[in-house]
Amino acid sequence: MMFIPLWKRVLVVVTVILSFAYCLPNFVSSGMRDAWEKSLPSWMPTKSMSLGLDLQGGSHLLLQADIDSVIKKRVEDVEAFARTKIKAGEIGYQSIGSVSNGVRVELKSEDSVSDLRKIFREADDQLAVDSEGSVVTAVFDEAGIKDITDKTIAQSIEVVSRRVNGTGTKEPIIQRQGDDRILVQLPGMNDPKRVKELLDKTAQLSFHLVSMTGEGLNIMTLPMHGEVGQTLPINRRPLLTGDMLVNATPTFQDGAPIVSFRLNTAGAKKFCDVTRDNVDKPFAVVLDKEIITAPRINEAICTGSAVISGNFTVQEASDLALLLRAGALPTSLSIVEERTVGPSLGSDSVEAGKIATMVAFLLIIAYMMMSYRLFGVFASVALFINMVLIIALLSMLQATLTLPGIAGIVLTMGMAVDANVLIFERIREEIRSGRSIISAMDTGYEKAMASIIDSNLTTLISGIILYAVGTGPIKGFAVTMSIGIATSLFSAIMLTRLMLVVWLRVTKPKTLPL
Image (cartoon, rainbow, N blue to C red):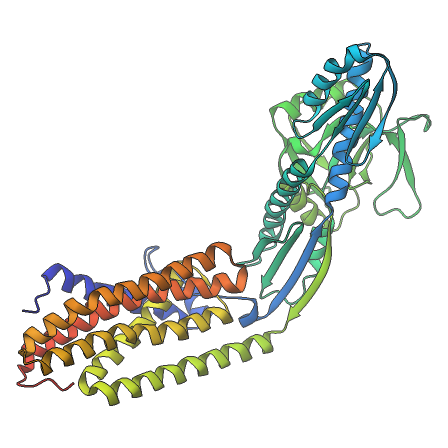
């Protein structure tokens, strides 16, 4: 006998009610959703699905990281480190210089080869060190370059994410594409100029003493921010770097926009020592090879907090603080592709998606009702609730719906009734073999279950693989398809069965309208 325990009936009813509650915010205005969020308790559903770039418009940027400059900088650091250590260890050498992706040292004696190998290993653990006679070569091989590339891209994605999120962009998509590229999609942002300006800066902050003579090998001349044609000579070696910053905020001093920053413990101590030893000397704050400001040190600054001033506008001060908080990019990022999807084109996609979904829904209902009559009505009701469940889950997960995602929903609509088709056909076979109504329905559900689980499980595995290895649009398709599979199993196995049991108990039919 078809028996459904009380807890299962309660579970189905509560799930359906909650799905309608979580689905509702998607069909009201954003103003009403904001009002609900302010007035309703935090546990009440007030969130809606987020629309992707192709549905609400926005900007698409493809960035390329300059990996060659990162490797060049690593090679320069290794060479400088090796020179210092060789001189400190009084190791005799004839020449030292860079080669492709590495450093080459020709020693005066082969006896020093092992010592030089230790120096290179200490300089960078990614180096592949080789020697031939008194010549030692340390290079970044293929594995080393791959490791550098992976770390550079990972760090760049993290920094770009912090910078983009700091501008208030909702649901940005930031992910790696290929070996050295980063995809940035900004739904709802039709003018990405400000974001591009933020991404153009590497945000490498450093503090240097201003050179009093302006001469020497360790001196470099940099331009002053906001002052055309004016430069200043500074010591090449920084006294303090921006990686010691804990926080930076825009504020005002004497009515002018400035940036206030705070250093960590180590940075505060070092800043205190530097300012104490250089009272009455000019001190340059350099951001991306441009001198932001060069104030005179009046006294030791030992609080760990200071300000950066430099004739900023309010927006410039806000952007600089955001850049400093987000951290420095490990290398420059160039824009190799840029597209803007207008909101009108996005709305056209939404309308097309609505029409496609509605047509598919109506055709499936028509087919089910013609083929299975009253049972087709039950399947159609379950299909509608299945759609509500999908939207509710997407809203709960704050998932981003894209055009391929709509395609995934349309696909799962067909798959949702597939389980009911298997069950209904099995029930028909059992009725033809002479079983009673209750026995036929029990047997139909029992024998169709293995086929239903197998077919849905194999499709779910495909969805998981698509999500794991795919990129943006493919992931959107995989998410909606996987959610649709889970909800269709629920609606076919539990919801439709509950409706049939209630119908049987109420009407007690002599024959099945199937």
